[in-house]
Image (cartoon, rainbow, N blue to C red; front, side, top):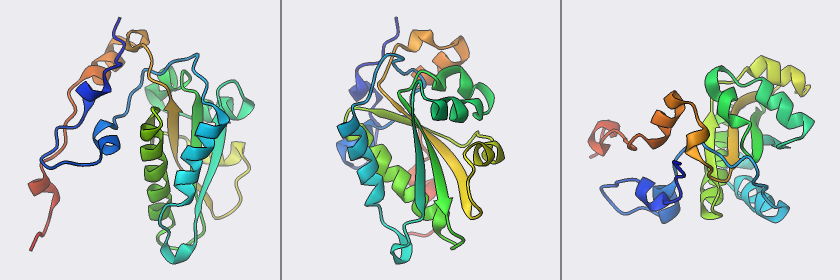
Amino acid sequence: MTLITDTHSRSADTTSPILPALAARWSPRGFDPTAVIDEDTLTTVLEAARWAPSGNNNQPARFIVARRGSESFRKIHSHLMGFNQAWADKASVLILNIAEGDNPWAQYDLGQAVAHLTIQAQHEGLFTHQLGGIDRKGLADAFHLKAGQDAVTVTVLGVLGDADSLSPELLEREIAPRTRKPLSEVLLVND
């Protein structure tokens, strides 16, 4: 059984100290299919997204929150692409992340909101996995999104589960070492 419960062993090997929730954050695929996130905790995670920075305070982030077993969960899951469908149904919640408005920074602000949600979830002992492999048009149609509401990504939210339930290909990704490009490669200019 490959239950990854020691999240410290998955902590990022940083060159400089960062907040524990940031260092511990990683994107699992093995979620506990029986875990339920209580409403207070889910509200706290969403509240963190609500208070993210926003250009001109436009607050373009919108969310469709779908709990496992609901019709909305089924709709979101059915519009995941590739092998994301093979594991995302085990999560407690799927969140469709939507940018509303035509200002040039709406998607940037949505990303900030999702990042805040992600770190708050980590702080609460939950895990997230961000998905870009989605059928955006299909999701827009399924949820009757209005003009100017763009389905951008899906956040998978839940409790860490048994990685052995994953296919061999997904298990290999689940337990692979965490890596990042060196900071020197990321900084284009650092005067």
